[in-house]
Length: 310
Image (cartoon, rainbow, N blue to C red; front, side):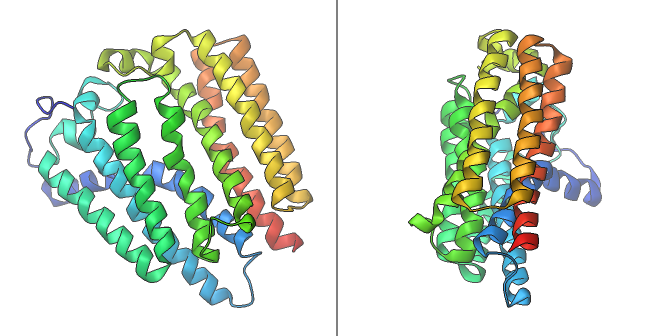
């Protein structure tokens, strides 16, 4: 990690400063992580339950704590990668390369968010959920960002563990236990998100291949061809869809989820197959954008299935 690429802090006013700190948390990524948390909680709770108020408060507390935890991890990621971000056209406008926030201030902000998130989850949800969120942050920063991202094209595969942990946090928030046979659906949901991550991210990396190459980051499209990357994307997509169907079995879902899993999965596999046949930038971005819709709609169907059919 280099520090010389970071611009000296500049004056941007209070409003600009607040915006910069929000951007450090990468709110779009936070939203994507939370998409998987709430449906998992609904499944774990077998619906809203007899005490709707208590459940909704638990959901709100988990979402707040999860947002703070994910935001803290993203701030650390920005701090660690500020030299890379300064060399990539996609990321050079982020707060640290622009000098909107100093590295020291960003580091302190990340520490504060992480500590507050742990305390929040431990006090208002449960200790296990707090530990899971903290472990995900540590894995994302120490294993993915610092150890893998700059050293291996398998970085996003292994790093996907962190992005899949919110399913476990959501299950833990409701049941207090993720290391039991009853928690198998949570682990299958975890694997679903884990195998979703490479197709999602590699499709985007095809577009920014030159950016990653210039920054010295060995993303898969940098070290191999778009054709080979597309082949890997299709393989992971098949496993991901298999996990979505396995979830139907282990979580004893109904027809709403089954139809959604089959239809959404078929569309995903068609997009991945099209990319394999024609590994163009257009096809890659079509898959990337659909992958976001896929994850959101699939997890929404989990919640809808339980709320309507149970």
